[in-house]
Image (tube, rainbow, N blue to C red; front, side, top):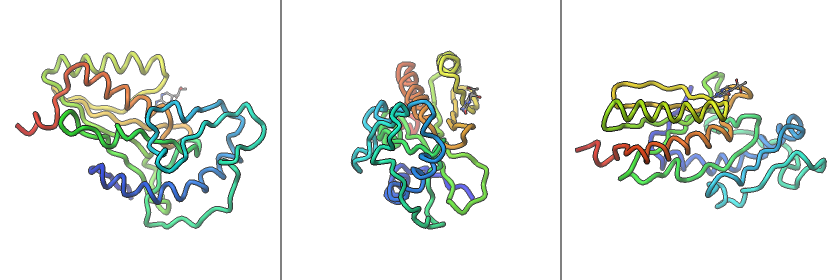
Length: 205
Ligand SMILES: C[C@H](O)[C@H](O)[C@H]1CNC2=NC(N)=NC(=O)C2=N1
């Protein structure tokens, strides 16, 4: 079963449980991934989790386990509460700009996550539809994003119909939502703004 949170407020409602269940993810991370390349979570602008005091850098260069990654006994997950499956079990701070954008300018990204008890293979992801004035602008958007994908070696699942482009970001290996998904979602927002994406108010006219 996969729940989609079309409403940003609904997505935010699930954040409190997500924050509380972080220790489970962290345990897995410390046993699997400390020697992986460093990922600096605080590079993401305006970390969403800063409200919860968890915007920290994770570096694999130190052999000591940072205090915030010290394994704790796993808490029993409530099977009814959806949790984000983070790629590599590394919890990230999601920038609020992705989930709570200005509705006059553009719609938010939809965060999709599966309940822990789910056997769904549907990966956690960020999805959003961009609407431009013309097909040419939509195609230009796809070209600019594609060029950045080549550089970052990270690629979207997307569809295009005339002036609309629907983009989904997820990480395949290790499966889940990862830092590049957040980075690329922000890149799409920036490029679409420069290309004059149609705002929500305009769309309802
Ligand atoms: C080897 C190469 O970096 C990987 O296969 C990349 C390619 N592009 C990708 N794109 C996306 N969206 N997720 C991935 O996990 C991914 N993996």
